[in-house]
Length: 277
Image (tube, rainbow, N blue to C red):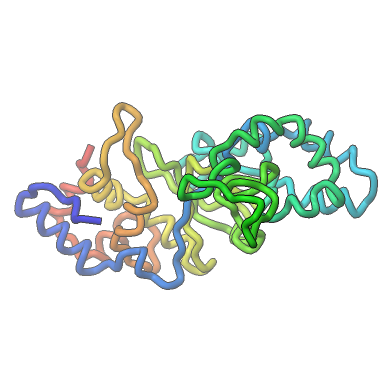
């Protein structure tokens, strides 16, 4: 990504240089992984409320099916649920039919299969179910033909998340809304997933709090105003690519004052940051 900083005065130029000199871009930290949330391709089928979840699980015919079904239905956050340092879960769940799960759903999780079958025509009509990434379709004569024409089976989520990929949500993560008026990052509970209107950072537990404090700081807001593109009246398009290039110091910090010290800002520079609107 090209350097997005615009024309700066001398004080702003000094702040820019200090951020870049004392921090290291998050995308260069080997312990950190930044990704988009889960894309379903059709939320009406895969995103359900508590009542529907309970109905699906209660219709299971055995304890083994109930356990497996419950493991495939997990709580999920939407972008609107996120606040700075917190979130309000609205009681929604996602049916986690990961890549290749269609091979066992009908036999081992018939309650999920029956529920998703209500939306079969809509799910089959998704672009990823009809086509490969190159716009073509598989042919039955292809050696690796798995029985569907596109990138994944109609029963499965878009973007083909693997079961192993979804394991990242077994840990706490830092999540944020990608279209936002301000920097609002929060740490989730273990087992909580996020939709693709959001992005998230997977980071070792010992680094979570410090990084979240920095991302919610006034310095990050200042940096965001100088680097991130505005998205009409909705705010800023704070995509993972922009978060990846933020030069962070991952030392112990408790507040903005600590952060200013880590970046060696002067009183004049702090005043500029504090008064950024």
